[in-house]
Length: 204
Image (cartoon, rainbow, N blue to C red; front, side, top):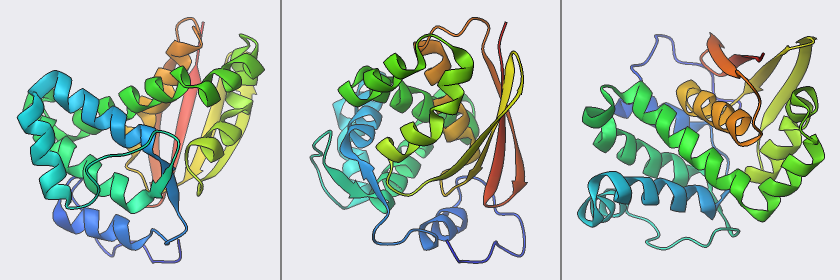
């Protein structure tokens, strides 16, 4: 992740923004195939089989993914942008479309065997759940820089140096809290700079 940030803010979802994000990804940066499959399943559920074929055709890479095989992070990012653009009219904007893709992908991950183990480790404690996020991120993707700070009895902040767009990660964290049945969980986020984001999680 040594590529410098862009001189000017790039429009979320644009070709230029995607190209910049792809430039941050090293060959060893990998993601589990279950995220690719979750994305395609959401597209199928909302838009049908033809939309899935459209995504795969524009993606130009694999047409079948194994859930727990590691694929290039680049392949997921490219596929995610194709799907987000396709779903933008349905969700009223690219930001919300990316949020929904992150939300659905996280729900799929925490329903998997690896995700269920992380949920068991949290033992229903929101503070423990947040503290386990770096481990979960490493399980889901092989290149993530993440730090968690507990800021109070019912709050915590997650700092991420990341390639993924902020709305996608925010949706994923919200889903994680819901799967863990964290009462009244709310996730808000802000960009610290183009490559670093902060996510505040509060609960009742």
